[in-house]
Amino acid sequence: MEAKEFAFIHEFLEQSARRYPQKLAVIHEKARKTYEEVNAQANRLASFLISSGVRRGDRVVQIFENGL
Image 1 (spheres, rainbow, N blue to C red):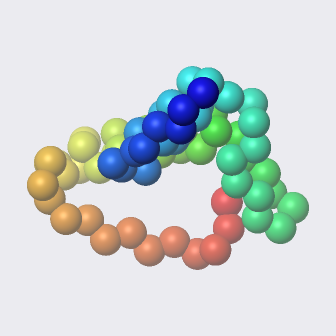
Image 2 (image 1 turned 135 degrees about the vertical axis):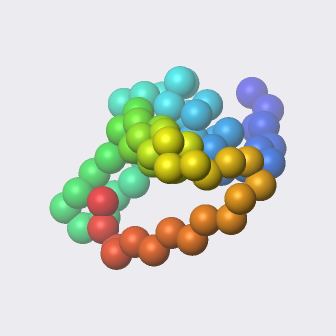
């Protein structure tokens, strides 16, 4: 199977969540998240940003501590 190139990280994440929902996507210390879990968290963040009035083309700064 030929590897697909992705223009954006969300494309990779969404496809991986569909194809391999239970595979580990992220490991940080003792915490582990599957592609399905990471995609769900990303979708919740996107929904929050949209409901807060963020629109396509807006710039958003995100600062997170290391961790899951």
